Image 1: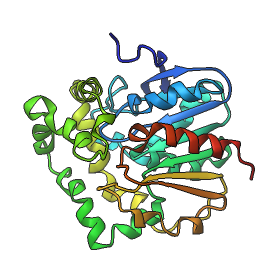
Image 2 (image 1 turned 90 degrees about the vertical axis):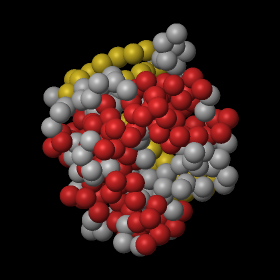
Image 3 (image 1 turned 30 degrees about the vertical axis):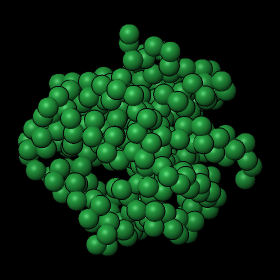
Image 4 (image 1 turned 180 degrees about the vertical axis):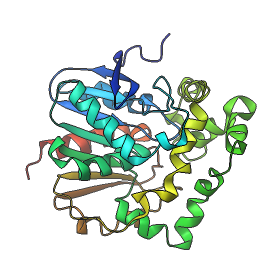
Length: 289
């Protein structure tokens, strides 16, 4: 059975010079979803089913992931390219703007896209990825540096790829089961899907290249203006990679800002607590600013 069965249609689109894969379901205004590491479109399976009732939901495979193109040059994995990928997808689908939803790396891209093209974002929803200014501030504290130590490990050539694929990609499985509070949120079939995606030729290096360019990127800048786009942040409180304190003070950077904390929930918030995440998203989308 194809992993897409029951979730939507497989489609491809060429954007910013790369061929990107996505799964889509529903009709109406565009809701574009951007996943994180080490995931792919499948991390939005619970939201695809829920929001396709009212929207054209598009869950993208970011460049380098799963069935999207995997450029070989490390220079292809920089924020400016990711932002242009998103712009091209929105326009290529025939829309002028969207509701943009991002988690983890997808959240970082969503923040940057909203700043670069605010007129193309009707609402912004970010899950377990702090505002870039707050992330930069946190990166200067010992506790967050310790939580982010894996980023420094990922800077090494070939060694991370070698270790991630050992024992049938056991490290990919452990990323989910090791961090999740509710281990039952991930079936063995879910874990196999993530391992299969990571095992595709060129995928591991592409996925890691996001991190290998992070030190040089604007992600670590604190110089950000006030974002005018109405924004919801949803945060699983038991995130072992990103501390809850990174969310404090976000309202100083976002004019219309809401935050919803979910206790007893890990970094994988939309998969571990999908009903609550969907509820908070719906309430936010129904609210007026």
